[in-house]
Image (cartoon, rainbow, N blue to C red; front, side, top):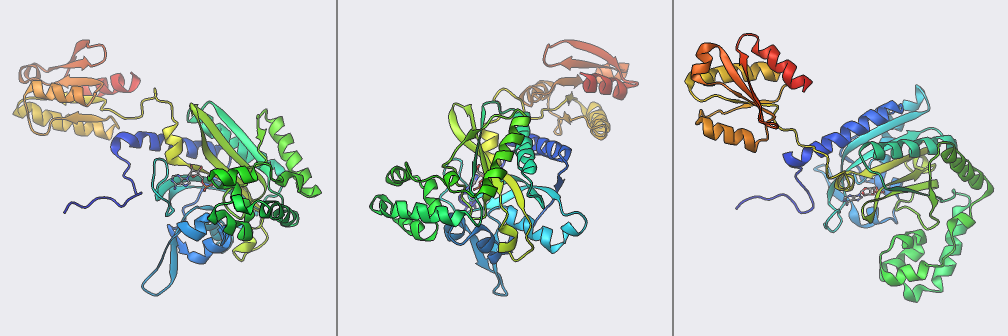
Length: 419
Ligand code: AMP
């Protein structure tokens, strides 16, 4: 029986990979420019890192983790997100001992046991950026600025930045109680999941898609009306710094984010690039996460971009597939050897050259050059080769010219690289 990939786990095929490489390359360039360094963290961690870090009463921890016991009976989980692992690495390797401020990014696969559907997978990719060790609101604005700059650099145009403040450990419990009291009155409208959430984590109800739950929370109290003076000052300063950078934003008092660890600033970026509304990325401040995972009191802020969604929003007119620079058409034994020799030299120069491995007819080689969308074709005919001359055909404008065999490599390099 033919073996297929697991449901929700995708192959990224060569005709798609150009987009992924472009997005990753741009992320590295932009983030490094903002002073961030890459960190690579393991795919699996001890389960308790996520259950304590993300929060027991979140959808991720309750239903979506890939958890299994290894042969020694230790419970491991395939990472559902990167922030908790990055925080663990910061503590474990005492990155703070060199400088308390760490600006880190990470690109890679995450795993969540969700119902696979378009845009929702069980293995999906995220680009994460985090700043550890700074509570000052200036860094909230800087992280958001970097995110928007990155999204524009990859070609997204119709972006909307939404922000909110979720309060802190001191003021959020008051809000939770207020929300709980309000929704208890309306519990008959709530779905079964939300009735449970009402006890464990009423903020989660904002994210529920069920119509009656959405109606129940439509006029619910807003977290922003409950935040303490310190959180209020912090949020006002974030807004001030965003204003200084001429960054437009809208306040979304209903945005609560899906994970427990967020405090104060929360943000999402919505794209209208494909007509409909798409949340491409979200993030926020999490000043309690480090303590939850048993570490020091370290503030943090960051975001995660869903790569599949971002890639689906890339401009449609941009070409991401790399076609051959040159196809060497060489019918005949002697010319075939010459094609092999020349292709090797071109490859070393970084020129994407192809030739026919099977020694087929000139017609069939030209058809293949066309199919592969080669920019140029170099025709090495037996007769021409004897005369020391070859023909270079520009496949775009169909013009042809004769080139001498001696110094051919340099001539091709100057044409193809400078074209
Ligand atoms: P989160 O870590 O839940 O805040 O998600 C951040 C981003 O990751 C979202 O905006 C999505 O674009 C993406 N994402 C989350 N879960 C999935 C999934 N199961 N499949 C594909 N993308 C996802």
